[in-house]
Image 1 (cartoon, one colour):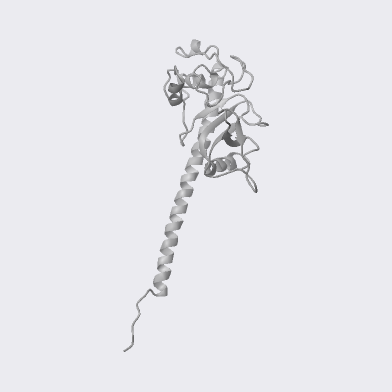
Image 2 (cartoon, rainbow, N blue to C red):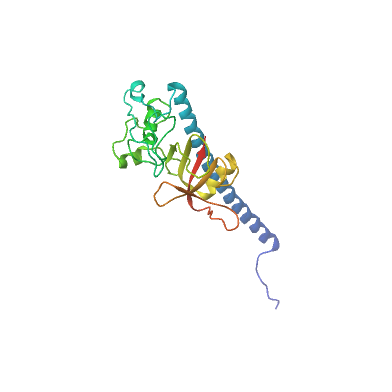
Length: 229
């Protein structure tokens, strides 16, 4: 009696391998599209924030938050009374810069009240009633697509970073942060007009990261990304 053995033919195995390859390719392509959409959303937040501030300045000849007459041309606006950002020297009202830290929740800071001024001027969406407490401000302030705070400050968040205004966003994964840097700047997180890092112990200073051999970059870590304008 001749015994018979059952199994897959080479053609069947080849078909299965092709199907697996197509499935893997679809998953990878889908993830690539998701990452691309996320990076575009972060980039859009940077550019839209800078555009809104420029529009306010063009209309009122002063910066939002730094506007000492905000309650004159925007009836319910609150004028800022505090201006410091961590150990940085305190600013002043109408000094041509947006004082206070980008991630401040101090309700009297220029960097917080800036958003009320923009909203009252119909340049940004959101609640136009100024927050009265830090816990309220935390929910009142705008968020990016990753759930991180979006904010502005007038002093450089990184040593050696130049510009008059700095827009920062929190909670951005390393993979997205590097993609944003590559699209808007040079792809180097510790150089140029786009930089990212992790918040220091005091929650103010941002420690930059480096890529390459011996670098501290991790694509799964959440970073603060800042753009200079």
